[in-house]
Length: 176
View 1 (cartoon, rainbow, N blue to C red):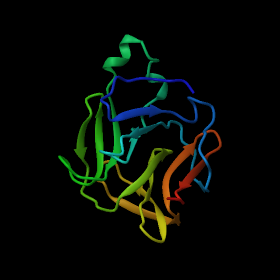
View 2 (view 1 turned 30 degrees about the horizontal axis):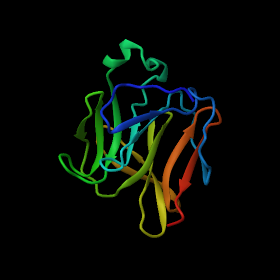
View 3 (view 1 turned 90 degrees about the vertical axis):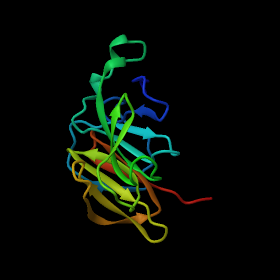
């Protein structure tokens, strides 16, 4: 996998799947067919401040320059995530100004989205469930409205979409 750096605050690490790496390295616990996406990239956030952050679906991964390229320090993009613990912004979906790291609440929503990814311009997520299934949802990046898509599966903690195979993968947590 190519390593990239946006000179972000300490909260964020960037990783790519699909076009950037040619394949995903995620464990498939479940497969959810969704329409093909033309652009997709994932931002992983520090669990102490946010649980999930997903790049803008309009962001083109080729716009990011490799480490040590001076022009990448000024690249400005918008990320999306879920603020699980409150603080200066409400619990719920947020937008993230990158590289500034400024969080902006999209809407207050206490139904924690444990993992999310973009597919065909739609923000999909799986919600945390302390018991039973973790439902599959969509999140509106403008209004924060969450729409139930399906029942999901027990203990889902993340999803990732492979643009090459048009398969969305889900991963669960079973252990201590």
